[in-house]
Length: 135
Image (cartoon, rainbow, N blue to C red; front, side, top):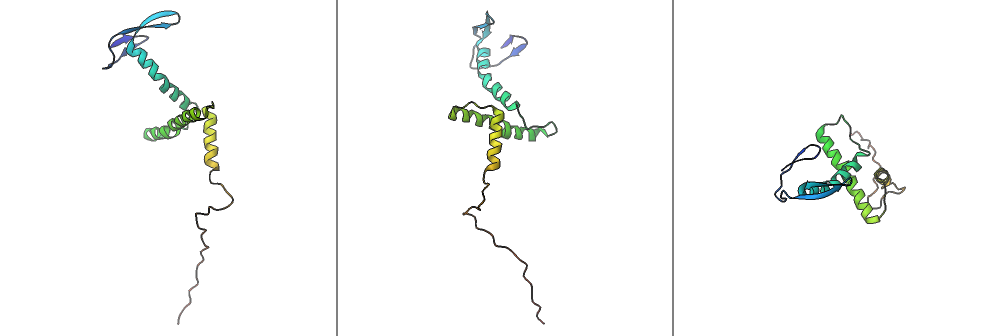
């Protein structure tokens, strides 16, 4: 299907027909294809996720593309997903920048204790043994 909004939009779907739906936009009634309306509803979450991950990105321009993809998945998408889960579980609304700071603080303070863990044995000091010469 070809439809023109501001630009030409070409869409192929086996789910939708060429049915048009009335949409109110700025106090005007516009006819849009049903497939475009469904697409616009679904893309909102992806756009919001991309927007949230772009606020404070650790990616740099000099990194190779495949490393950028891996870093983006690990450092951006995972953090946005974790923030979404955190908000749904705790019912607290926290900005993503503060959430990243909390993650960093949590990673840096884990395992810092004054005593060694009891499950790990303390290693003995190793010294170089002196050999005796036999004549």
